[in-house]
Image (cartoon, rainbow, N blue to C red):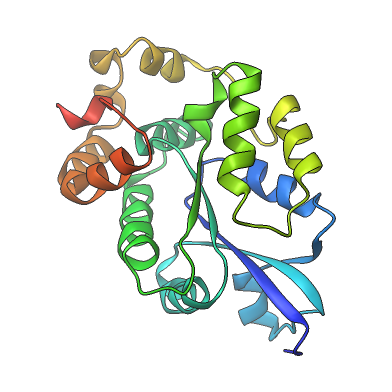
Amino acid sequence: MTEDTSVLFCPTVPHTGTTFLIEFLKADPAIKAFNSLQWLIRWHGELTPGLNLIHAHFNENLLDLIEAYASHWPTIISLRDPLLSILTGYSRSPEGDYTYLVDHFVHLVEIVDLGATDYTPIYLPLDLMEYLPVEERVQQFVEILTPLGYLDQKHCTTWAEKWAYAGSRGEYSLKASYLLRRVDQIKPFIPNEWAALVKAKPILRPFLEARGYKNLLWWNN
């Protein structure tokens, strides 16, 4: 790694708006190269000069490296109610087991948020911002990203105004049940995932509340 190489680290939980966040960051003029942490390990990849965007999911085999990267580089993370992430996964493949997503959220909190870092992680709670009036959404989006001084503010504003839904599932039946707060229509489809969420609540709830989440469905059930 050369002296003029730097990193913007982007570790995310699947189905939290990862594609949205990566496509936004890749389109910023400051970003010179994009790689996954998995690719760098597999191919012994070298980072190029300039600002590199590095992405990772919280897979067990990557946790040590995620901790190291998050400890030494500016880190930006997309957020979403974990239940919504689970429902998105289920809507794509109902036969899947999505309890691993709860584990990923716990890793996020324990390794990145509570870890010893040189930088305070930046969180984008995309589901909280989705339904805001455009002006308020733009303001929040730009303000949240202001600490990343090398990102182009005009680009941030344009992206927040358009709010491109890269990789979005849009509307689906379980999301409609979620918006209607119909726990009775959700729990039967994801009993194991629901139990995992409730078990992880002592770790996840304080973290999510600190990022603006309120009265999530699985907090009281």
